[in-house]
Length: 331
Image (tube, rainbow, N blue to C red; front, top):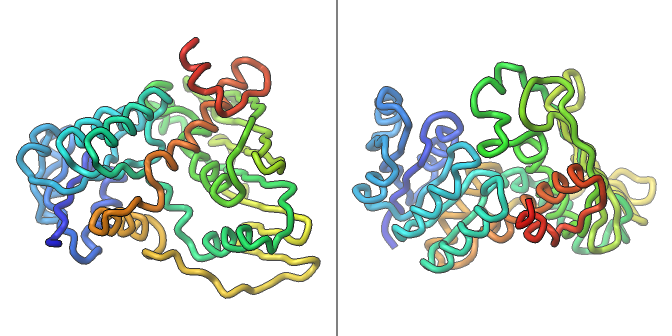
C-alpha cells in the first residue's frame, strides 16, 4: 500500500497536536487541513508543507484524502465525520465523538453504511502502566474488583468559558470535556458501567454547564465506584485512576499485591504511546483492514456513561446506561 494521505479538520488549536503526530509517522503524508479563517492557514501550510482550506467540503473534494482527523468543537464532530464518511474518507475523531447520543449514533451508522473506519481519540489508554494494569485485571491478579474510582480535578479560568467552551450544544462541562478520558479508562480497565447516580453543579464559573460532578457507579461485573470531576479547583492532584480488588490494587502507576508494592515489567502499547501511538494504530488499522483499538462503538461507550450521568442529575434518580437513548427521545 502506498503513502496514506492525511488531512485535519480544525488544523489550529489541538489540531496542531494531531498534525505533529501525523508528520512523525512513517508512511503517512499530511497533505491538507482546514481552519475557519484564511489568516490561520499560512502558518499551518508553512509548518507542514500542506494545503490549507477554509471549507471542509472543498478539502474533501480536492485533496484526495485517505484519512482525516476531526479536531473541531465537540458539538460539530458529527457533521464533519458524516461528510467525510460519505466522501469515503476514514475518520479519527477527537473526544467525545459528539455531545448527543443521536449524533454519535448517526456518525457510526453512516460510517458503517459507507464502509469506512471510524475511530475515537482516547490516547490516555496508550501508556505502559495502563496497558499493564489492564493485563493484570484480565489475568485476575487483583482478584475480584470491588471498587474502581477516578478523580479529575482541573482549573479552567472564567476566560476559558467566554467563547464556545461550556456551551451545552457545542462543548459541555467538566464531565464530557475533561473527565471523559478517565471515564473511558475506568471502563476499559474495569468493564462496562451498568448504572450511575449523579450530582452536578456550577459553583466556580459563570457558564451553562457543570463545573463539578460526583457520580456513583455500578459496573456490570458487580464492582462499585465513583467519578469526580471539576474545573474549579487549584492545587489538587490533577487526575487519578484507582482499582481495588480482593488481592491487590492499582493507583495511577502503583501496583500492590497483598501488602507488597510491586515493580512490574511494563507492557508497551502495540503501536506506541500517547496521541502519536493512537494515530499510528488508526493508520495501521486502515492499512491492515482491521478495527482500530478504539473504534466508533468503543468510543461511544464513555459518551453513554456521561449522558446517563447528566440524565441522573436532572431526574434525581439512578439511571441505567442503556436507558440513554430512550431518555434522549423524551427530552
